[in-house]
Image (tube, rainbow, N blue to C red; front, side, top):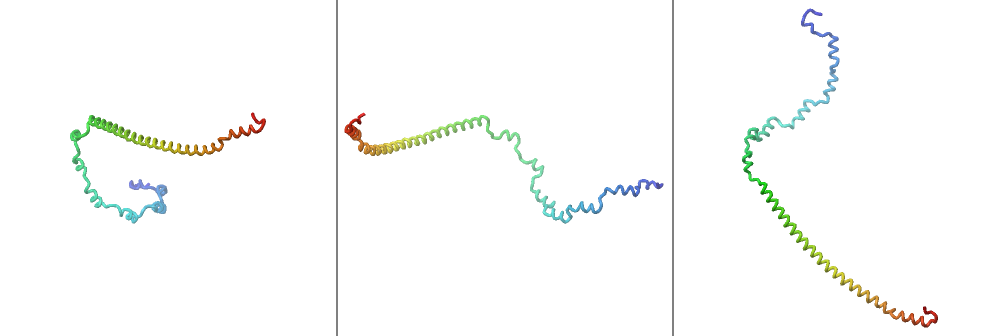
Amino acid sequence: MPENPDMAHLATRDELQLAIAPLATRDELQLAIAPLATRDELQLAIAPLATRDELQLAIAPLATRDELRLATLATRDELRLATLATRDEIRLARDEIRVLEHRIDAKFDVWLGAILAKIDERDVRMYAELARHTHAIEEGLTGRVAVVDEKYADLPARVTALEDAVPGSRR
């Protein structure tokens, strides 16, 4: 070892080669940085972004913290004095709503009753009309059946006469 104390901390060639062996080579570094953006690509990417001056102009009309602190907000006393409905007023309003609901229900019932009465009235008229038509059809059929009945009205007497004419046919 050299006698110079500054030389004591120097590494040997083997130690240096062992130390730099894990480091990447130039080709490995080129491969590693190949997917990264170039300076030109970064310039193109940030071009549409706002500049500091543009941001300053954009936030200039906004309120500062101090302005927000000093803003005229309602105090607790002002809120207490505000004209809000009391519980009694709310109860009265609910009662009025219930009364109105009952009135509406009553009017609806009357209206519905009137509609049902009209329907019943129409039903009665329709059934009366149907009864008249049925009676007319019945009279027409009765007349037609009577014609057939008249044709054969003397049938029992004729049969009796025939039976009397034939000896031994009487039962």
